Image 1: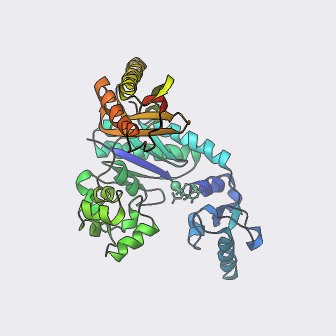
Image 2: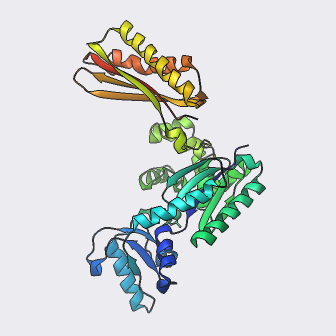
Image 3: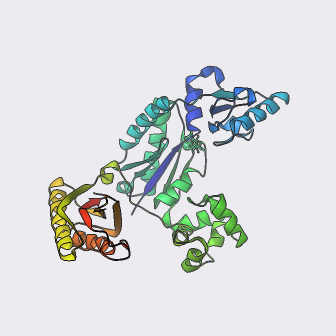
Length: 357
Ligand code: TTP
Ligand code: MG
């Protein structure tokens, strides 16, 4: 059983500043561009929860944030404390938080400065996974004096939506059997990738909630939204990726070779590609990695135009055969009109494997 967790720090930049400046405790805070007395350009990076009650959020124009603060002041409420962004400081805090998480999970994928996915499958139960998440939250509070919200689920999609479900300082676990119900009443925009544009298109088709999306077939969604629509079909049912992309996996092993003479002779090119695959596979075998999921090629034409293609296989692979087969499939279109309509001759070929585990 897969158990994936997602952690997201609460009002991250603002929370760090509040922690470091006891004098502003309890005040609304906006971290971002200089408001310059209402004439500032740029936007708010983030606002703490008190400032959010004034209508100030990430990406709110700083001039508007200033107006909202002035308005609050007139109403006798505390004005907003405006602070500049200190990336260096937040990055250091972020590193320490990631370290805490990695001490409790064998596999961590940092997704942004304040969020990460981590694998808790080894715990074997949701109860034990929750326990570990409570420990992580406690440790972050003790060591960094900050709060985080955590979600636990059968995949990254559910974990992420669950972490946002009870903010701030939340912990929400959604088991696989409950995932569909958990999503049903949420707005379609709760699904990652559904921005304002898609949202209004969906509304015009009568889709408000995630459960409304389930009335459409995969093909209908694809027609409506393009290739990406098929993904939404699965997301609406709570299905998502379970493999985390750790830095380890982001590594790749590749080989390339410039030909002695530029050519478009298929025999020669396929022969070279087979040779490159052999070299890549040799290094892969010696690397200690056990599988690869993505195969990629590079083609440089005689005019130095350089193209790359990659394909991710559905199951982790570990054979030279798969590597050869996939690179040949990627290579073929460069030998004919599909990707080489001007019949340009080739000067260099490369092959690589990625997403190593
Ligand atoms: P988020 O996790 O999206 O926001 P947050 O941590 O401030 O608040 P929440 O409690 O809702 O999670 O983003 C993390 C940090 O990234 C945020 O503190 C500031 C920065 N950020 C920007 O600079 N611009 C943006 O538009 C967003 C969304 C975030
Ligand atoms: Mg956050």
